[in-house]
Length: 319
Image (cartoon, rainbow, N blue to C red; front, top):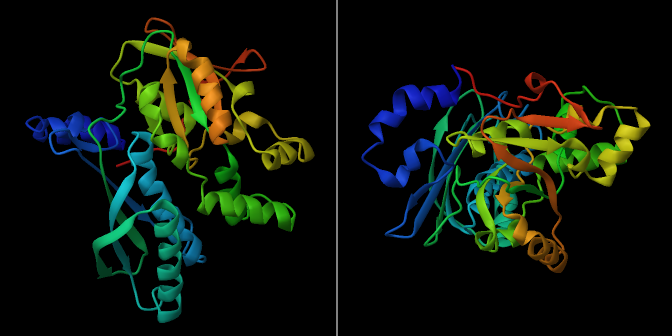
């Protein structure tokens, strides 16, 4: 059973009297009356990150991936609460000072304030972050329209390379190694575009569990399907160089998650507006596919060839 089966089978039924919970089928809690938007995420060592070797970078990843949920809804995060578990060896004075310094940098960068939290003793490092913002509207899931364009912000795939470098599964030169590890720990969040997404997006979410997996979640309660052109999925120059040098297949590296870019759909009539805004804000926004009728099967094509969708599942929590 994965986390979504768990929610549907057990948890959804006890949230039915709370419309702000969005039937537990979105990434945030939204109390429209009070303009309150809340998200929560948990990160466990060995599951969400390989180890605690780089605490100054890891804490940035934890915070950025947490505020990503709100950004994808068109909401700027204002406050956050963080809880941490570990022991005195893992959280010694030196590491703790490093973590605090990194959090302070992130607070300034994203204009977000620490507002509380908790600490517990444990042999394994874990973090839990609650993020709060305020808005009179959000861009929800399951609001896609037939024939909508599908877009992503930024680049896809760098983080997965970084993770595999950290796990010693990929050997590359020192400059490339530094770049990909940094992309894993410090994703380039589409902060600028967040406040504008209401103007054109019908539905949206962030890409955390993998592009294919997250597109399915984006429309999972609608009688719709989608098609994606892998050739159009944006990648960095560094990833392009890696693929060419080591003769790797692009599709292996684009559907694994941890990208923390915004995935959204929009009507075709907004194409020129989106393109113009992307240029003005110096923000990469790329059209990668379209929404189709429900009776059609989901399709992912690479060089005009249909791909085996079972290999594109991304990350899934199993219980």
